[in-house]
Image: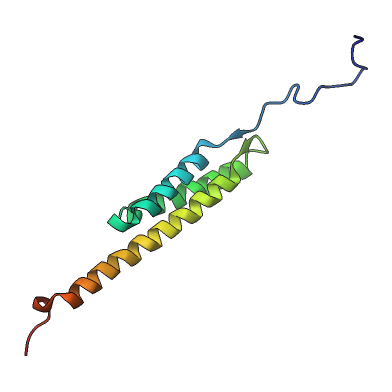
Length: 110
């Protein structure tokens, strides 16, 4: 087989493969856990954590010059973190209000 013509560079030769940012993966995982655990109010802690990690990861990916990927993972982690936080806060207030309304001893009697 003859050698390739001069100036020919096989695809991928000399270039590092794009790697997924680990912070984007962590943001996605913590965002999922924040939604799953929003019933026990862990989303109040995990939601902002996922959102901050997703935001930082998106900045790192944007400034990497194409060397890092995972922008969509970071965005989904950020969104899931916000949703987990909102769901957890909503659940917290729902439990407080329903407990106050269903507990006759909590309201003063005339």
